Image 1: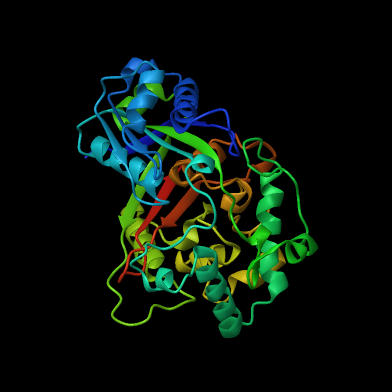
Image 2: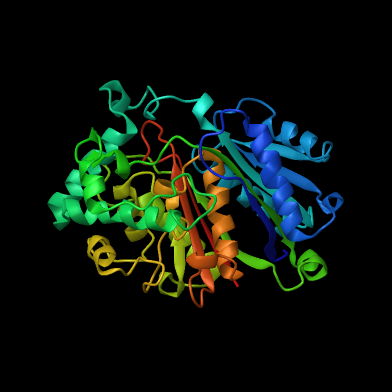
Amino acid sequence: MSDVHILGVGMTRFGKHPDRDAADLGAEALRGAVSDSGIDPRAIEAAYCGHVFQGMVTGQRILAQVGLAGLPLSNVENACSSGATAIREASLAVRAGEHDVVVAVGTEHLTTRFRGALTPDPSDPEAAVGATMPAVYAMRATRYMEEFGMTREQLALIPVKNKTNAAHNPLAHFRDKITVEDVLESRPIADPLRLHDCSPVTDGAAAVIVMSKRAAKRYGNGRAVRLTASALRTGTVDVEPTSMTFEPLTWATAQDAYERAGIGPEEVDFAEVHDCFSIAEVLRVEGLGLFKQGEYPAAVERGDADIDGSLPINPSGGLLGKGHPLGGTGVAQVVELVRQLRGEAGVRQIEGARVGLAHCRGGKAVGIEGAACTVQILVR
């Protein structure tokens, strides 16, 4: 089985794009990835396209725009992990020796496909009582405060950190820094969460070119980054109420990724984590084993998760700052990892970064803890 490398990466500006569609955005990201890789696009042998609400054959429309129609292509829907799952499928095709060069695209034009707060599936108990996803995470935040003593000000520091990072990311949805006071005074969404605690409705796309070790030697010129693990899991059946303050699905997926990569969480230099809400970053960083349970809020307060801290979290701005175009999110996380590991992140650059982790989780289905979770580990 071949080692897997990522060479080319591309990404659109995340935000609201009323004059464009998901295929147009995906085509821009794919052209950017090809340009970044320096390869002849005719070297691409197959493609995977992750999206959620974009309907049939979105990937085919993207390939047609860039002159690559005719390739083997699979469209992938796996909730917020759709784009990350597309990368995993591309990596499996390379590991199996089926292809040497494969592109994975994630795209979403969310502003035209979804309005209002995301809700669980109608079959879920939460949906039956009218709970939206902000309400579910608000309950998790309240419980975490009760169990571990997190203050409302500590929770507010997470969107402050992430939007500070996003202010230095030219492709981020939000480019303005905020303060704790801005968070606490923003519009209430679901107590204790306020507007700045929630990721926005975003349009955008990202793409990566995945290749074998043989192809990386041929095309890479030393710029390829190794994808040492791409783990995917779904939640197990709930036989008792799931903890509100710990995510077994995130933990299990991370353990799978660490084993595949041959490392432990202590070797991770930085991470892009699925912070759809401020409390989600807390739960997932701890679920990944990057900080002990109950300790992450204080670590953020100390500056440990800042770009110049001991373990930077979401240097891109995360979902709270960069934006969350569902299908595009998991690919954009890997774009950030590659740019950081190649030393190309500009003022967001993490000094000495060699191991990066991307965590993406989304969706809910009745009777299980969560729908899909991916953890990708890249090594320079």
